[in-house]
Image 1: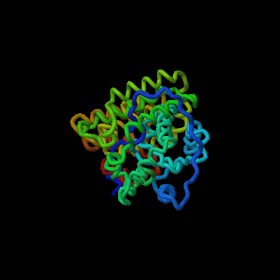
Image 2: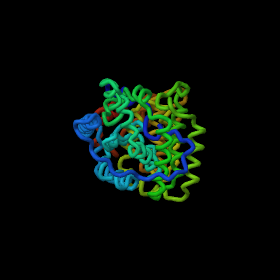
Image 3: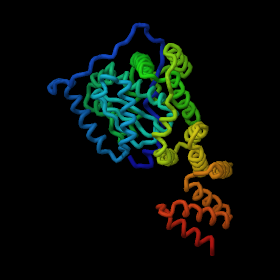
Image 4: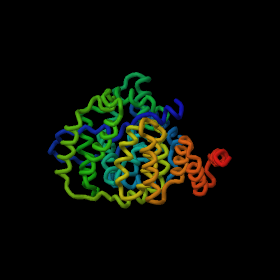
Length: 382
């Protein structure tokens, strides 16, 4: 699968798989740590397969080179997983789609598209807690055991750790999605783990609401989504998440810390989101996150660039408005001026285009497209 098609893959996985239901009143206890199965057993063979997948994941070019951020997310996982912490290994992947998953051997991956969409640490804890709930109840292991053929096992393994198989994700998710009972358990367990770790459980429903907003913005939103094939509708999900939040009151969002930890990566993640090729979903996302307390100029630039690249009726005017707002806020990405120059050049506004391109090179003299931009400036100066 080529890079372009890869980036066009839609939002998927993680908390998108939540299917809240009424939950049992019986208290749930964290199980003891799991022992590695005997290598000669069927389960041991499956673990060996996952170990090989994890080696591939570790060497993947999409592995995010961010040790401090990885340690931070690992710390959140440890707060939730508690005595299982030593067995969980977090991998952050630079992939612009919404996804987090966890394999039975403790391998967890979190994609940057999910991180971009989180407003605070509590929302990430909601996703991670849900996945840890599946892990502690060994739901994915049940799925692996149910995969009788080697080809089915290979497809199911694609859910855990092989980013290159993202193009098959919808097919795999539709074939091997967790059962409704599994999702019910993971919701209940995730909420309990969140609460006991000191998080505001009400943030879990916001993650689902925000993701639904993006999915509904897609022109193909009426088409069935395999990721939701085995799950109830939005209303039931939100109602049960609200019920969980009412049971587990209080807690923190830790928004300020979250913004501090992710700030160095936002521009890179936004660049990937722009390239993802889902303009309607991206606009819905960027319209929402532009209301955050920091980084508004970056989000406005990104939304303007999505408008510019889509270039539908009225889009270029919307792009100009967003670029102007980003510049007015200050600390705008240098690419804001390059994008302005492109619009002005196309509209035969030579002086404005030249000024924008020159400003871009002032802010980013080592930009990879500097030679091309200088050629534009010479053309406009002739």
